[in-house]
Image (cartoon, rainbow, N blue to C red):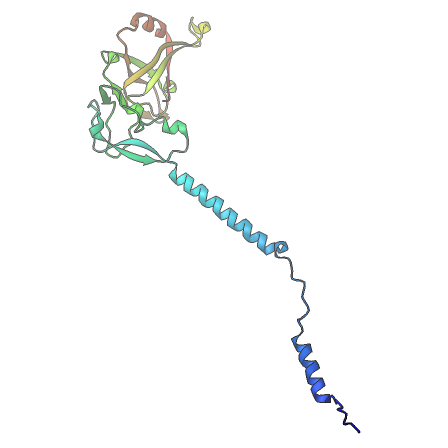
Length: 234
């Protein structure tokens, strides 16, 4: 009788193998939460973008400066103003209107430029502070201007239109206001005299007039009228 091999599975081995196979099986995959739906992610993105925009705006404002001339030493009224008296300065202006009042480094000073009033060290050079010794320097017309007809802060070097405004009770009241001089340069302004009510009365203003101007016509237009000066902005 032939010997037969009988395979007997040992219960402990079978149990151990089964547990090993179960341990090596991959865990069940969990449904991960989609990150792009996380509101915290979007809040972070908004904060980063806001910071970049704010930083760019601050940098652009800091760089938004222009070059203008400033005085390197005191220059008395009437003295010549040249490139040797000036140095470039970078300044930020809120609007172009304010910038236009000052001489930028890209602009040339007019020939024969002189200080219309005392200029102090460090001051920015304004167009109103510069006068020229051209044809208008030979004649100066004194005007008695009421306080109500003077622009605030009028000073030597400013350019003005001179208007003749008829008085209410005068015969010329119906004629209306007329411009007697256009773009005239102020040579000097009498200091204001203050009373109990503030600035009162008339102030003497010297106006430079071209030699070619018809002074007789100008004086005729101003006679019997109240004078109003309109300052021109550069």
